[in-house]
Image 1 (tube, rainbow, N blue to C red):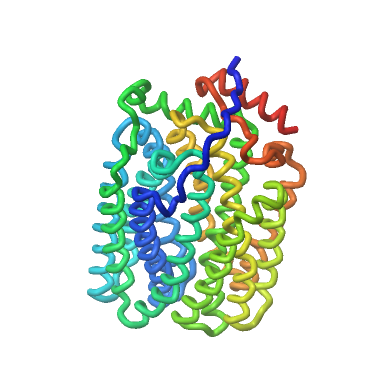
Image 2: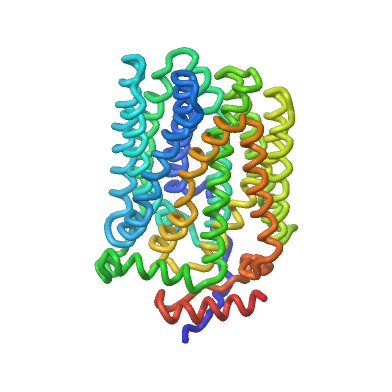
Length: 439
């Protein structure tokens, strides 16, 4: 049976802002997020204004998500076997090609839906490959005890980039419909360059590669997730949460248009929501020190339920933005809780595979959100579709009150013990011991 070992406390490491490799990686990824937030507004706007159909707009988002989910498992296994640096350079460069093609198609005028869906799918495939390497690489760039802080800072950076990118995307789209896609293509070059400039080896170590075949490595990650209650619960619960969220993101654009707003209003509403996310990133460290992680999760979910109801009811775009600003404060603390506890539990040698399995599980239903949300909007109207998603969010909030699998969140993060041993029987013993301790 695996033994659970507590690690002795170490001296405080230097600030993340003094970590040169972290800052290079942080900047490159931030610029890529800025470009993605610009094009994420432009894709549904183009489909909505060209066809008038929320369902067709949802098909583009769904194609991107399907591509991402499809490659997530493969990317996670590869990241424990081949150069993470190569994966994180080649993936963004492939996305550069996809977005450049989209920009060219839109520039020509009246781009057909099928090629846009194909490019979105290809970009999603490259994104899924890259995401599998991101978490294991971050653990090489920053000390383990700073992973939680780096996660919160990364989310804050992404939210600031999205805060700028949302109105910028609406403005560029209003200026020339192909500009947002060209900007995103350039941003992926920045992401590849940021990774190339990192000096530290990103792994995997040579001794860790080639120990298992592709499917054997994947099975090891699946076993570790399946045998630990917390990891298993977050995969299933997170899958439905992400599906609802993706559906809401599409309906948000359609709702602003339904309330009389144009592309600039869509960008400003997204910007208002992201201001709330930035505030959440700033206050997350204080929240995590003062509240139990489970309390953070529960409060965040009930805030989301109330915000869905309010967004469906308010009549003006600026009021939609105000509601979302308040609700988005909870987004960063919720994600920091989920990611920090997973990073604390999973050993480094399994981080790529486990991250791939959990990401695949959490994203496997995402593609259904835009399709279901778009179809509901076409059938029942946009406000009715938002209320339908509110009911789904309500069910997810109630589940948190009943599940014992999130008992680990009652333990302070620094006291959570790491799973040890192999990802089969030994990991199961460790997970059982942990879940028993967590009550």
